[in-house]
Length: 214
Image 1 (cartoon, one colour):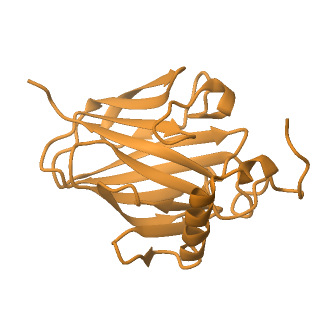
Image 2 (cartoon, rainbow, N blue to C red):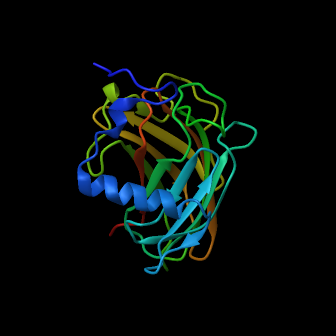
């Protein structure tokens, strides 16, 4: 059951453990300066109604722009230094309002483009994205978060380097790009729509480059 709260906010989203709440406040202060570089090299990039952080390690964000509409998508540029999964942390920086105006509210509709530089030294033959509302836990249907799951024939999923894609729902929200390759020191672009009909303050995007086996 939802607890009534101020318009534009979901009060159930404030139920953080104290330690996590303190960390969220600290990161919110950092996000006042887009591109702020923390002492340990972590960067928090704010654009539109969201921020993007490489705080969980294994890769580096080099830029962020856009508001999340089809005409002005959220564009995140990254550099991956290995062929192992990495996790992008996404937080809201504006009030949450489902279907509110993009850029002014975290509205649960996020057209995204991820531009990834392959600095791993190995060719990638597939690339998978996975959404998680809770870190390291599968995103299930009931949380409202998905790669536009309600649309059975999406026309907004595209990659510069891969010809095909598969979407998997239940018990995971995964998007796999296949039939292509990203050579070392080359950049691949990926476009997709993320929908979250019960928006949260924080969620995660796991990125998993695949290399040949055998």
